[in-house]
Image 1 (spheres, helix red, strand yellow):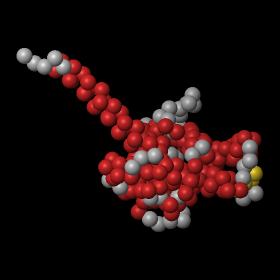
Image 2 (cartoon, helix red, strand yellow; image 1 turned 180 degrees about the vertical axis):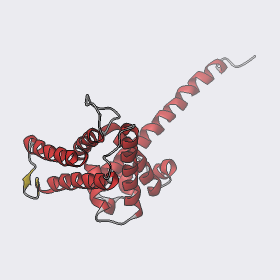
Image 3 (cartoon, helix red, strand yellow; image 1 turned 45 degrees about the vertical axis):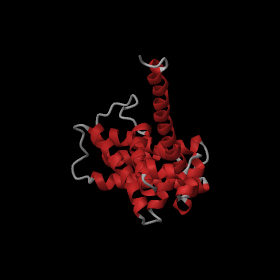
Image 4 (tube, rainbow, N blue to C red; image 1 turned 30 degrees about the vertical axis):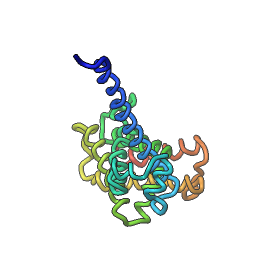
Amino acid sequence: MAPANAAVKIPLEMPVVEKRVRNRAATEQAILDAAKRLLAEEGFQNFGINAVARGAGCDKQLIYRYYGGLDGLVEAIGTDLGSWVTDRIPDDTGGMFLLTYGDLMERLSMLFLDALRADPLMRRIVAWEVSENSEQVRRLSEARSKALAGWIERMRGSLMPPKGVDAQAVNAMIFAAIQHIVLAAAVSDQCAGLALKNGKDWEKAATALKRIVRGVYG
């Protein structure tokens, strides 16, 4: 005859396994969040296993176990940047009818402007792109660029830029302008003499950006 406690052995063990699964997922997310926070505040100069572990409140061995070390952690951040584009630049029109390629690029420009202003880590990455030539920075930059290109492909459908317009080159200039003005504003609340201190200032900047987009794409 089986021991009296045999019937309770399985149900007692199951919650322990489930708890471990939940704890691992929570720890992985804590590590990823700490890594992103550290990059946004300190940059790659102080980006290390020990610092991330302190920020996440976990043993550094868990970073090696779950991410394989710093390279794997950077890879995970790059993957997360793809989600950043999905979360901050949604696949919808926001009530705007996209009848032309100009409509599409106006919508993307406004979304990208707002998203970049709201995200200190993304601003850091953009700044690194023009100041550092490291493999880590390239991987993060490529992840964002790929996600933005994917957004355009998903949203444009049959919309095409006007004949004779090099959309890739023009869009690169639009993104560069947005990135520069946001970085300048974060440092000095202005860009080339244009005040960028409050909502009214940013409305003026957004209106100018729309006019540039429409000037090229109609």
